[in-house]
Image (cartoon, rainbow, N blue to C red; front, side):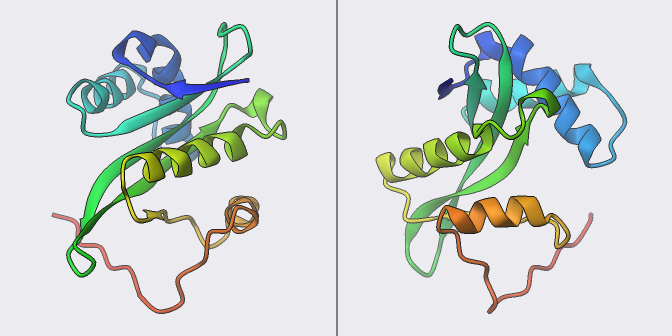
Length: 148
């Protein structure tokens, strides 16, 4: 399996995965919107996307997307691992684990002092993966959101 950073040349492989990811979270299918959104993030350098491919590079298996952020208290940069998706036919092959490990390596290589992510309370398989990789669930802070 190949794990590499996606570029705009990879949009034909990334966009369908991103559209499937959005559908997993109950959004209607919209390949054009998925392609536009993730393409803009890559093109503008607003996120880093890692793509998992079959050994010969012919088929996309999954992706993860990281957004840069900053911690005011620590005065250091970090990344938010916002998206992680593995195609249904590629699950149980270690794709998510390899993508998560590459994200950790990238964060360390770029001087980030941590990675953060959020997941649904009922997403037990993802929680088990994260914890097996050393991620620690926050028990101290609440997350609040405000739609505008």
